[in-house]
Length: 223
Image (cartoon, rainbow, N blue to C red; front, top):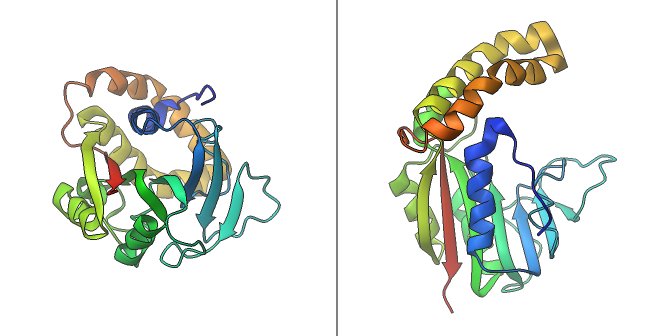
């Protein structure tokens, strides 16, 4: 695993993702990255794996660090039981057929294979009033989604807390206006202004964890 530089706006989440991959105790093998996007994020964490990325985005001329498949996650183009590790980082809130997609993720994992899955919590509905995606997960609904696919939940935790929640809610409410005024400069501008609060949240939210911003799950496919 190569050195991974966490971003301050997503420090709690990305720390959990790094911990989750380490927790899998897999140092190499074949990995599927569901909802991988086209910017190659988290490539350092997967540098020892042979990675197949799946997303519906047209990659254009993007130079991706893994094999890219433009494919619906509910209909994966792989045979059963071929991946040692699966990751789905902030993906399942966007997948309409989430039950089918989770079953597909379980299908392509090897027996004993591990999965690291993160989604926004149901409290983050307030950020964009439901416009972020078709699904907002409570702990119970996410646990059921994963369990019903045939995977065993090893660990589930909430990440981010009170400070980050308030900061992200304000950022989300301001962004429709800010992005119109400042266009592509808005996101680096607002993140730069909020940097002290992101750094504060990284320490304070260890104690004040409610409401969590994200659920982080480590799951295993039964042998």
